[in-house]
Amino acid sequence: MSKESRQQHPFPFGTKLAKYFLVERKTRLFQGVVWWYNPETRLYAITYEDGDVEEMDIAEVNFCVLLEKSREDLNILARLMTQTRAQMIVFMALSSP
Image (cartoon, rainbow, N blue to C red):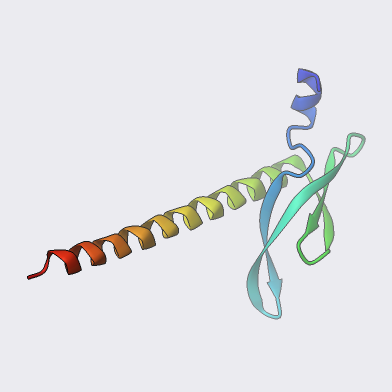
């Protein structure tokens, strides 16, 4: 893919993203992927885990990709904190008289 095409289409097919939707009066996060790009309209087609599809412009895709990355980072941080807490408990148990 040329540099020019990447500038016009920076999100490759399969790029993960996340978006909040209101479902039965509750906000719910859905994960999706970029599966198509229309260069004429400059819109991306996004398919979600529940099978829904929508089109987004580049700004909205960028926001949703950042949201997915933040969500992944928070999950990693939570796992690390859980592991650290478990290690501290074991250390305290082994250290106590």
